[in-house]
Image (cartoon, rainbow, N blue to C red; front, top):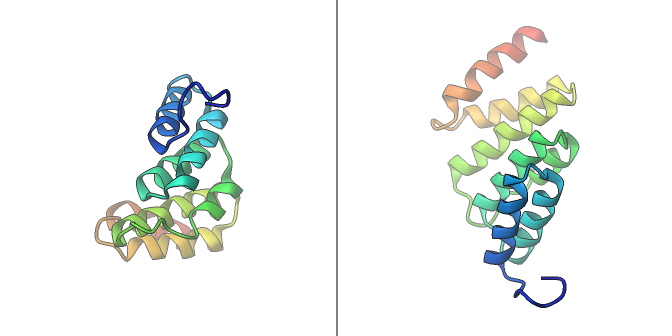
Length: 126
């Protein structure tokens, strides 16, 4: 892509990110997916990026990247982003922020089953 042999498109960047991910090169995968996201923001790509950030222990970046949902995100997607943000805050040892994010996620019936126990756990810790 950098040399012009392959067209820079969302599809090609997504494919490149997928190859980097399969090779366990998480930082390179995140970079490729971010370029695709910057060209055409979708919640599918956003969630993929955040999950990779968590795997790669990029917790602070994950908290920031989940604050604004992609334009096509629905309520369930926003709840999943809140859940992932809560996981990142937990890893950053910020239980108050983790609890706030998990409570937001738990408001969605789709995320209640996974976020609810986290809310209980974090409240018990506080």
